[in-house]
Length: 111
Length: 116
Image 1 (tube, each protein chain N blue to C red):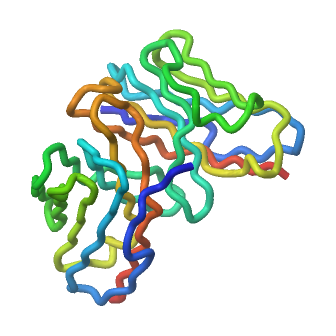
Image 2: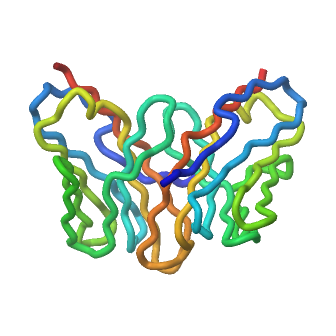
């Protein structure tokens, strides 16, 4: 099935560093969601974005809805060991119910 | 409040057997989704229910897969004549409504299906 392209695929960072990841689509979306998934768990919703250019924060996490409506970005500031996991983006077009998920960014934080 | 729950958490079965996976959505959520997640991949859409009816089952891989939601709440995903390729984590999600502008999907913990 169709999946969105996420970059980077994986990353190792030092505790305290900032992290950036992005998600791109060939389609225009009207909603972007960002999830975090821990091993053996379901994805947990982090941030929802509904307007082009929107910048939304949730604690140390900040996500942006790209102005082209074909991309989204997630930043994590001052990373900590519990940030380890897989981050997924998901996008949806106007008037539809189906979300398309990205391929995931695997984050590992070195203490 | 209670989130999305799924049972069983793990299911091991033999090739050719029939399995049922259950999802209990968040109370009041009319939209329910089933996804399948293979190792190293993001969730892939299987089927969407709005109320009791399957509004879109285009993601079901073949006719061995079937899902029901008879009372508009709990849903059961049914897989007949299981094959080893069916092994994956099956995720369920629910949202207040399928197509509304502000529509966030919340996931359950998943059922890990292993077909031997």
